[in-house]
Image (cartoon, rainbow, N blue to C red; front, top):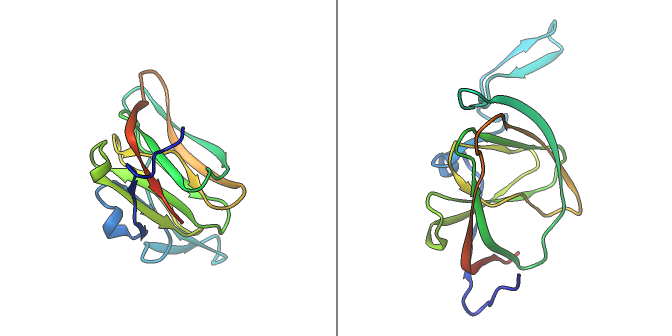
Length: 166
């Protein structure tokens, strides 16, 4: 879908911080996290960086998502949310990536964050977000989300469009 750039809303890219991302969920990273030594002192456990939240009949699952970049400028024409469970993404490489979220499915409420390859995120239940936006040629993510009965995906098309210019 081609976005008419004369009508497009350009998103500013913000650095990903715990405080700024708090309305949408959690930032998963080791700086500032609770930790302790385990395995006879050979391992540091960064404890409870996020919790998997699922509905009554769902279960938490682990998957790997492999993403490729979208054409530039990145057109934002849809958002999705998961009303029955949280969803966490942790990159498996050191590459930066982008996160687009919104408290309401409207262009004026969109925010774009740039995460480092050492930062993951967990969307809270029901948070509107854009699917994965990677900057590297290919990037894998460990994903924790909900599997089970019930409709756990709402999608909304946005018109006329917003775009991210790198």
